[in-house]
Length: 138
Image 1 (cartoon, rainbow, N blue to C red):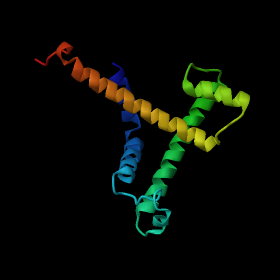
Image 2: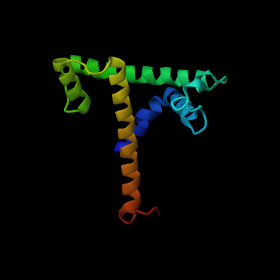
Image 3: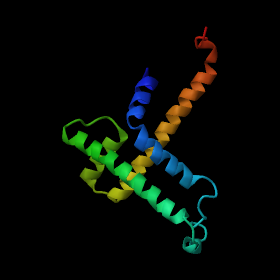
Image 4: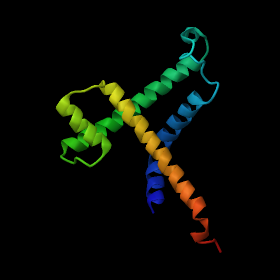
């Protein structure tokens, strides 16, 4: 049932989400970008890789900023949950911010991605591990 609800939610946002997803995949596939972390001089290499990387960076920044705004709006309405982001926001609001807002948004965006990957792997793994318990099509 959860999978159906999530697929319906994805279907509503499929146009924008799918485009962002495929642009992101194109930017991170092996060989798509020179290893500028290893040799910074490669940043000056010509090609469309830099424009694509900057475009995907702006897409992800806007995605995580919108997600953070949703969390802030929810918290402003008094809906504070037992979630990692709520705990960290409360802690940082009380004790000060060790990260910039930009770094915080990106960190929790990456954690959100990792959680989604982990959950999908968990579902796929449990479906294959317990395949004998699943009903067979007739």
